[in-house]
Image (cartoon, rainbow, N blue to C red; front, side, top):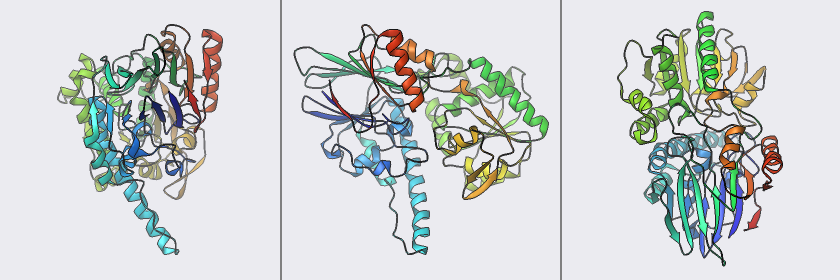
Length: 460
């Protein structure tokens, strides 16, 4: 087997791994790069021809693992996209949303360029390219071994990260003995509010493993819920609103679930929550359609009608409705995308409210280096939002116990369940996290570890 790390090895976004084995050519992940400094990375030459790919595996629906699927279709890919049913259902609205954003952004850039004598800008892909890739999905169940091709089998395990997320086991025989490689995907943490706990493989010869939180652990969930409740109470007492930048998939549903429980338990008075994300509304509907992925308590939450002991949840659909939210001065929670403040409606809310000392911004997810969210979390006093310098006067809270990623202890528990001492390729992590995790695996478990770089090829 020849394995090439196309993207996501040197960074925490843009995951993409190219495999050649027994005359099969396929990808594991087809992710888009995100964050400042990623401009142009998705236009780089790749070491494969999309029209020659037989398959593309997608472990879950986050755009940094799936966002270039329409680009692959645009460039000739006509094979199968293998995922779970829930991942496929999530990606329908997500990829359409991604294409819409790119079309809108490039239209704005083109107008700007034309005013100065520049050249038009083309989107990475369009909604037509999304519609071309959706029929290519081939959905599979968890915990069942399927034949991929000559001498190659695979199985999907529940990764416990977001709805439908999976780790991928691949068995291949290109010599006398069959070998096995596991792609972790993004590993979730135990005890998440909705999603089931992650399942770990029993054995492997090689593992391509994420290391997002390889150098740190999360706060206990209950401690994070307490911190969230305290921040909300303090903000409302000051006469401000709470703004939560949140990913449309997974995090938003978790936060809604937790806020609802805080009201039902009497820890917070009933208040208004504005979900300012048409995509998040569509994703929530997908969640409701897949109760097999979460527990009985969560199933009741998604199917029970609002009562006086529930939050007042409002879906904000149009831009005009979103703009009206800036007239709200206090006592409201506004949840909007994107989770790293790199796009979407949250940027407009930050522009109008980040300078208000009575308000709070609560970050409930990972902020990649270079993103607007990361700059705010790191303590910037002034940030540029939609072309304007905005003072940061609002209270900033980082509550990392809500992360959908396993912390260091969860990653160690997952990998330590493997029999033997497989070779571990450490990917999907910033330098400090990946290096720290690699040293820990080598020192504690005796694993052979290697952190590849983008563009590197290994034969295993």
